Image (tube, rainbow, N blue to C red; front, side, top):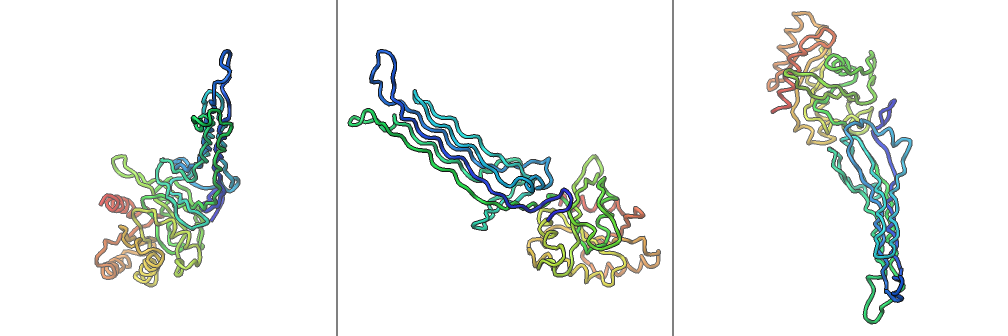
Length: 332
């Protein structure tokens, strides 16, 4: 899926380098006419390596460059000199990128730090002729060829890394909340599916602490089956530590909305229900004092086991308490 400069799903082709050939050189120098074999080994081919880069947040670069190739190893030479190894092809990806082998469909790894992952090893260099010297064959005139590299196709799938993920139907105020709590500037408009790409923002907390919040495209009923934009939303939310369920104050049925959201998460991946979560009623500025008290009473009955927060991003109401509650959830 793409919007603007955000790309979170690409397919690429990569190949490792071929190993260099071993040398068949026979030693020759003044006064030594039959020095024997001294051909060196070939260098190995370059590996294909994936490396996490915290400065990247999209797979945009792969939209224009989908082919990657490591260098071949150099051939061996005289005096048992080993050829130089081929230069590795290091592919830098954002943290949270999943590497999948296209042929087998196997998930090879998920890049969550700056450690390197060797996806394809380069071909081994061939052995030089000095390895094959024996009492019965003192001047072998053959050496091994280097082993060929490998070619593979990969799918790169980015799952946004954030501490808190916003969960809610379209147009419930997720983007407005992100803009109110962070310096992010997501697109805000009064229609569904305004957000077509994940937006990240840093929420400043007390004592110079902070956490990352993600506004991801709204979920609809049937999202786990691919309806709307939910497939992409659900894929990204797997990386969030805490989920913030946003339910608008003007919803016809608070519990029904919450149940649908939880049901879609369960259908996609039951493990998502094990995450810590917070429930917030957004757009509470639409309620007068009497209606807000009635809504609070209803929320207490609807969610007896949860501390439901009432917030208004526009009126800046309840946001400090919300940040404290999210901070507590992240540290429990």
